[in-house]
Amino acid sequence: PIRGETAEEKVHWSRKRRWDVRIWDVQIQNVSNQQTKSFCHIMFANTREEFLVKVPNKQRPELWASGQASMTFFTPVVEDEIGDKEFTEVGVDGRFEWHGSYMDLENQTLRIEMWNYSPFFVNKFDSFFEAPLVDFAKGSIQNEVDCVKMDRFGTGKIRHKVL
Image (cartoon, rainbow, N blue to C red; front, side, top):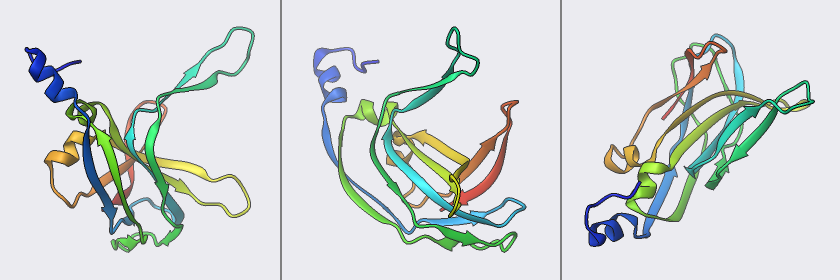
């Protein structure tokens, strides 16, 4: 959608601007009932969506994806104790320049995925948080978000808090 009623307003809302973005002092709190070794996958300016698609003549649905994440990075693996109610510092300081319009702030998201680390097997997706960038542009500098694990019925359970 294009904002504005006049041509001048539409240009204003869709003009690309330079944004100085910094994600630092990331901390994780384990609120699940099991000890975890986990890491964050942080995607900034994310438009990626994934779909399970049933393909004719195949038994299992295929995973299709559209969109992309413009800036993505991973935190180091941290071991977090159960019920210690303490945040664990993960040592991330990501600073970069992002080019986007005011409309991009509304249409693109910050997505944080929590993954359980396994040194010998495949890492397992645990939980996620996703919100439009405009929420962070208008909001506080320091944010605490809940990473939720969705069950097959669509209800979510908070597994991690990220500060």
